[in-house]
Image (cartoon, rainbow, N blue to C red; front, side, top):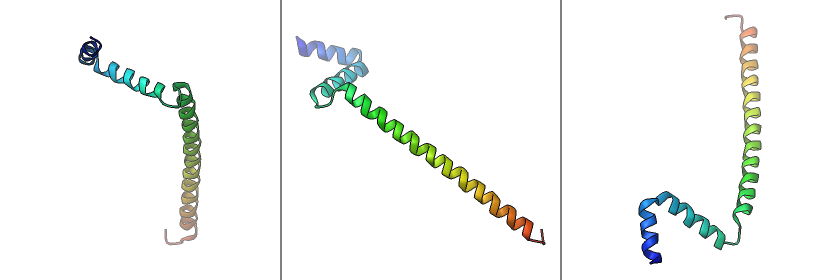
Length: 79
């Protein structure tokens, strides 16, 4: 009967059943869902910090690029 109900639910709501199966597998593992969420949140924070650093570096490179070409234009009497 349990297998029959599982097949019925899989046909009726396949995405929900996949999510429930995933949660069941997580519960069986060593990490709980809360621990995984905390770990993922920390990873997202680290990635955001890296992204912000890359944005700052990109802005610095653009400013240096503009400065170099501005000086080249100023020092070049042919332009």
